[in-house]
Image 1 (tube, rainbow, N blue to C red):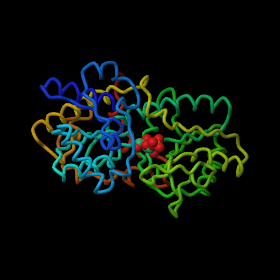
Image 2 (spheres, rainbow, N blue to C red; image 1 turned 60 degrees about the vertical axis):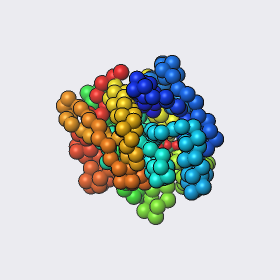
Image 3 (cartoon, rainbow, N blue to C red; image 1 turned 90 degrees about the vertical axis):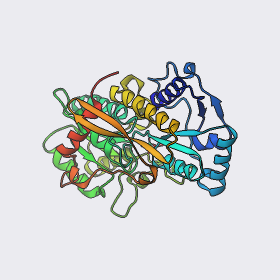
Length: 359
Ligand code: F6P
């Protein structure tokens, strides 16, 4: 995120524009937390996790009154073009502002990779690096301590990040034995049977599960346990506790030694594992967004289009934001095996180029 903010600021300044930063998203807009940005403000930020502009979900901005007030505040501060970095929810807000006459351009930034029309979203592969590193570590200790480790990966309703955990498989790491994505209904009993069957072949098992897996009736697995029911300003439940529920379940059913590992926000703050693709593409989309805004484009999002796999190369395009807002890009069914326990080679070929190269 910071690499994208830096790109917007530097590109804007070098084009002779005044650049302002809005803290805490639409919440900050409504509270007029708007500051002038200089090149100094974005130096030394490229490898910092999180976002220097903070982030927030804002219920008021979902109302027509909130959106009209937001547009008024933009006009008051002389904002001619607004670059919105985020996911589908942020773009839905951007579209409202565009309809009210404020020029808005979206930049796809989320570790979830769930935005329609773009090949890539800023933050994804740095988060993948964290998941891969975790699996690499957990694999070794699970082997020596002969236990079943369940690793919970973020991504909400999209399984891109969890599926990409398969990339940890290589010469010195066996990778996960099982991968469960939220796109498919999760069957607790079949899961238990699968673990039992694997335990007849080996003494250590590593499972990657998405935080958003749900049973056939739509209940999140994390809701079956004792997790705290925290709900954000949009009414989204905070997903947490899936691994710990599953670890207790198999410990109870099978009696094997288990450990639950929830990667949680570590995935959004891995500056030590920052990916080169992430940084370069953040720069590409940030620059393209300022160019589009400066040329008077509005209601659009900069998307990344893959030009080649080897060497991996992406170019930018500009698409209508209404085609993207509130449309989740999910893992296609045929990129998961028949049993729903691992991703296919097509999935792996799609994500592998994204994680090439260190900063
Ligand atoms: O959208 C990014 C994401 O990290 C999701 O993968 C996750 O479900 C959600 O945000 C968690 O957000 P928070 O930590 O703010 O509850």
